[in-house]
Length: 568
Image (tube, rainbow, N blue to C red; front, top):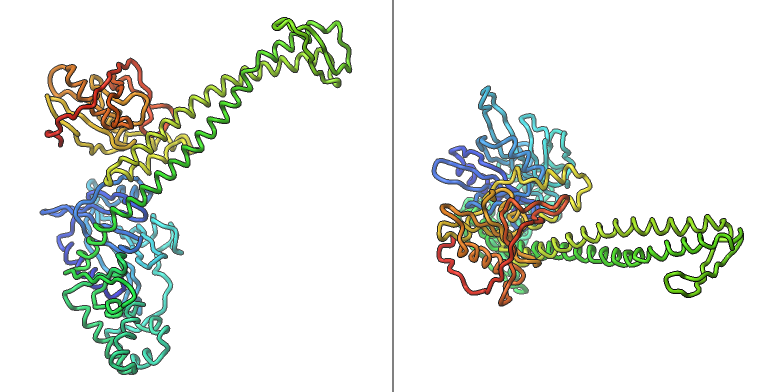
């Protein structure tokens, strides 16, 4: 949206936060966007801030799905502005000083609960097209954190508005100055006067072409458009199904285009239009992101399989280690026949009772040649042990990636994004301390509801690796039963008994859920492992949700429909 539309939007938003809502928490969203949960006496809303087109901007929305990725700026926001009040939303520039930048300033005030000290923080949002960013600043406008890295404002510096021309203020401009502006070439108008945007420039050109392109008519149309900004209607334009722009005035040059499919939608506020864009674009955007994540996981899986193939080939080489020991023994037994400089030894092999030819290094003594083969034998033995470790680790990694791909392919749109974050585990992180911190569930907020409740039991289903980890290691307590389909990708299932003892029927229901939420869900019979959740352990340095378990029992599940009428 252009500056004039943004100005109207910010005026509307300022009225909506008159009661100074309290910040509950900040969350990450997809791509370069975050939202801040605000609570008033009557309701809870999310203030969405997005840097990516076509819904670049900020708007108030109903509660969004929480994708807690814990980016740096979100962690900073949650550390500094939780329980603060949002007291003001305004444009950051000063029109009287010729600043007409699409930059919005959010002002938060928090009071220290122990000492009563006041702390002021600002979020500066630059909605400037491709070069956009969000900054968290203190009371002196020193930048504490930021989302992107696209501007010259660096962390630690004092924030300054983007470099731009000092523009004439349309609110108090004289006609002779307007005449000078619109007598200049059309591509220079935007650099001379505030409110003008590429869309407004095109609209002025379009309308003056109808009534006559003169300087006077250009001025007249410019003033008309500014007056239209006070109208109640907000216009959203879609070209060939894609959102083109949101405008507080009519864009006839888009409507009258005959070469493309045009849609004009009307809304009461910019906020409604922004929510429409979000509701219509988010599923498509998240599906695209989902495809990207699955592609990345498949690439990683392919790499792991290639590494496994190489290790298996190396193991075959090492498995011939006994022949090196046998050759060393043959050389040692025939030392009396050899002398320095010999290139070949012919001797009877005690294993096959055949004459074998053994090549020798003439630069070494016979004893040194024997020692060389004994060393190769020892190296091969050590190599087999190391290769077996690598093969075991790679098999575990491959199984984990296959499970992530399956989870991603079957994830609901609300939960898939967390799978993207789950790929960023210590298997990709060289800093082990950071990896352990990332993998720890200590700071994870449990928000998983029981999938099924019946017979005094609650059954929890993990739809991604993060939820699997939560269910198993945060919700699960000794005495709870943990389920997973045997040797195939699938969800972690947790059975918690509210009262009484766990029965065979309870076990069967949990096993069915594990089977139905697994790669083998289309099979007629599925083997499911189950054990006390205390027997399930994280795999050291493994991916989130990657576990090993002991003392399990296996049940063969015949997949017949189960009653989910009590599903919550």
